[in-house]
Every structure is written in C-alpha cells, then in structure tokens.
Image 1: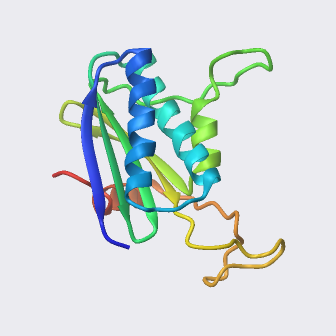
Image 2: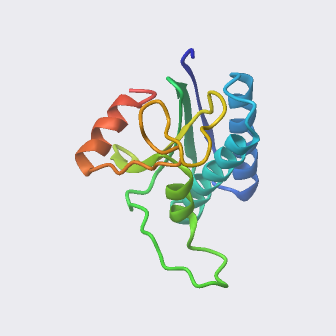
Length: 167
C-alpha cells in the first residue's frame, strides 16, 4: 500500500474538532484504505478523543498528523501543553474521563511524547486488508485477531521515531 500523509492545524474549538474528525475520515477514505465501516468508526472516535483531550486540557491551536503506511494508520495530535494525559477513574454517570481508555481499547498501541513546543499524542490502528479470521483462529503472524500490543517507554520512543511524519 503506498505511503499517504496529511498534516493540518485546527483551532481548539468544538466545531474545529468536528470538522477535523470529518476531514481525517474523508482523507483516509480518499486514500482507498478500506471500505470497512468499523475501521472508520474507530478512526473517528480515536480522532475525536485525541482532539477533544487537546481542546479540554491544552487549548490553543492543535496540529493533526495522519499517515497510512504498511497497513497501519497513525493519527497524532500535537498541542502546546507539556502536561501529559493522565487516566482517570470515571464513575458510571460521568460524562468525561474515558477518552484514554477508549483510545487504548480501539488501537493497537498509542503513546505520548514531549515536543519542543508541547506534546504529541498518537495512536495506531490496523487497516483492514481483508476478512478477519473466524473466531478462535489466529492471523498469519500467529496472533489472535483482536490482540493488543504492549510497548515499553523505550519502545514508544522507537515507534514514535519510526512513525514520525514530519521532522
């Protein structure tokens, strides 16, 4: 699959979050990544959570990076805050506090790193390349179809360098 990437800046407003989520989804569809509606639902939710976290906790303009390469979709949001996201324990009726858990659940892996001007929060989703194996079966690499990867801090640094879109 050919390498595709896009980078754009949005203001930290609810309307901008909605527009950016739509732009991301439209762009990835234009790349011909997949016709899998589940992928686009996950992509839009992950994009929304990353952007909303930037809106609520950092303010100011945010830069969005999206890259499709070798069957992986990488989405990143850069903001001007150096404060790293912190998971919270949300009560059943809380309207906030589940974003990081959703991102972790929906992606293969995710991370955050400091930049010169703030931080970069990123997540990686696999792009569907065909039908998933039947329940209980493994993929070609031997992993379970719904497997998640754990990454150490050193691994996160390595992966962020591998997936870095713009130097």
